Length: 153
Image (cartoon, rainbow, N blue to C red):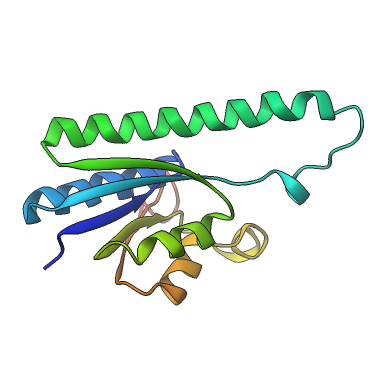
């Protein structure tokens, strides 16, 4: 069945819920996992003026460190469960990198933040794009923050 799972994460609580579910599945199947953190370029997301250029490198280093810390948390979870793993920090647009990597694995397991309305339009959905375009099956783990309206139903 599934021998290798790709578990993308951005370190958010939703993504960590996806990682936990992916690890539970991998343990049950005796599969290996690959954690993936995508470091997105700042580009148009951040208005860079001459006064901000000295901070660009420091900001990129902070983002890289956050990615490494996120992967470290994920690998510790895998070790605790006895699941074989590898971890990758790659650069690029998140959905594109995940889609490229997905071809190397049997299944992609990722969470959705469950954004709706204007949030979904403005922020987009990496998960939604991966589901629509993935060459491999995608297991989507729904996430609702504790105390949210949807969680109280």
